[in-house]
Image 1 (cartoon, rainbow, N blue to C red):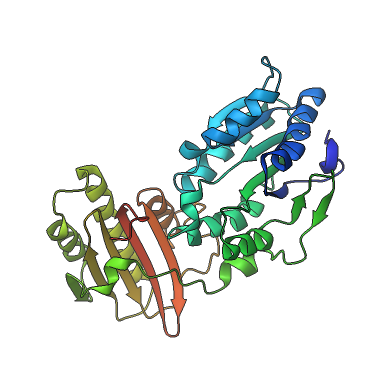
Image 2: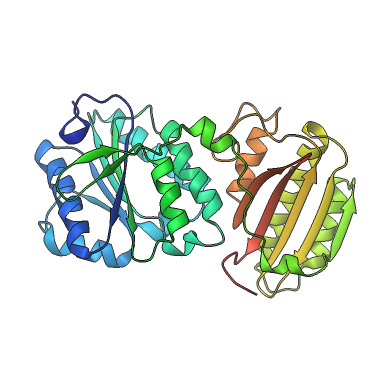
Length: 320
């Protein structure tokens, strides 16, 4: 049985909680969690350390709430979806009529990697819709850039307000439409330099060799191995499902390696590609899903006559 603002709703009740003070955050978050306790519903908090501390200070000490580290949950969008779907499945299998979650993407994601987190916020409207979930995604308007807040309103059907109102967002865009749009990410600063490698029509093995040659010994070997695997999979998919010419460009910075794989095709037909596993792998969807869990950042974007997947290993937030 659904309770609170989500009473009578089927599927995922997805809200944004945009606030400009600790008091406004608590004015929404505290009743949300106390309502779960009163109704005997599972409640999960996945916030940053500071906001977790604010809630712990005002909640009953013995409150039956699951506290998770937001920084740990929100490392990669595909990994977050996989972890949440497992947790929601477990709660639903245990008979939960509603599950409440309040979560917070780390603010460093609002910069160079926001493009894939915006895709996440849109995709979860579909990815979690089979569960009786009511969630609030927390955004501090004092440190969230205006373009990010605009995306938040486009990817959340509703907003939760401190006066106990739950309003529809006029700019909300259905996931298939939002995810099918062209969203070129900001160029990585390392791309200002000439690429270390610029290959046309390379085999997956040649692409792996280029990544290996770019390794300066700064990144952990496991990260380099993951990037080599990801580049190999992406090049194979470009040859198999894209259109010639396939081009691979590679840059290396002080703390990361960036690889752009471009082909002349339109890109995946599935708007959720990479964030959710697609098919049995015959169309590249399963491989792209694994790639999204292996790299520090993955950007997908279309430009006239070409489709690019940009893969990063290392620190995508650095300006170096």
